[in-house]
Image (tube, rainbow, N blue to C red; front, side, top):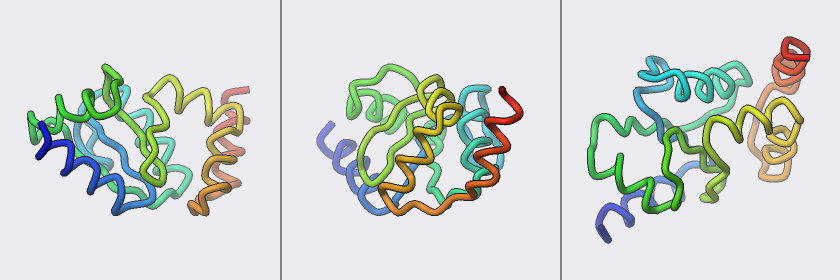
Length: 120
């Protein structure tokens, strides 16, 4: 497990935003991963995607690493933020904007506002 944990730690440390997901940001393989990737893509966030379906050690390892049972999992500046429901709530409340602002993560504020308007 140490090797997997080290790989995960290196991954989340080497990019400002990392999404562990089923599939890729251009081809998500589950609805929850698709929702989070869709939000990040629409908002223009530059992020790394890790396809957990391509590596069984990472698929289980990320759950152990975060102590969170589900995928997708979003990390910002090395810190676990949450899964699909949490990211959806944070997007709609504006908390995700704040998190990105506080961590100097670039995103399109107008796109974030459009998501909220569409879901109001």
